[in-house]
Amino acid sequence: MSDESKNNNETNEDKLRKIDEFFNQFEEKTNDGSANIEEFLSKFNEMEKQQQAEKAEIEARRQTRMDRLNEKKSKKKKSFRLVVRPHPM
Image (tube, rainbow, N blue to C red; front, side, top):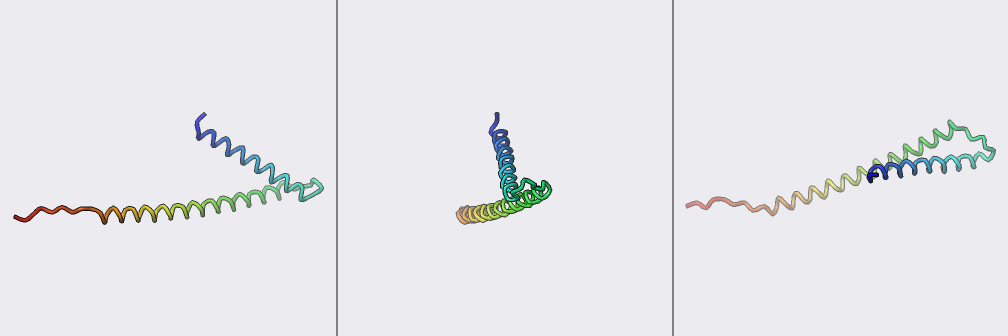
């Protein structure tokens, strides 16, 4: 099995585990076992959207830092270029 498919399987298993844990917590809060599945799904989807937004923000910050580092590297490279001009005779 390739690393990518292993990561995919682990990710899917993690998602299923997270759903189970969240549902169990949700059911415990209702105490009488009458957990409304629509309410659960809406809260879970809201939580997922929030996590995706946080991941997107983290990725945007990471990309900004990488862009700044690359910009600094390119400026350093430009400053160390040696210009050779023909000697006038």
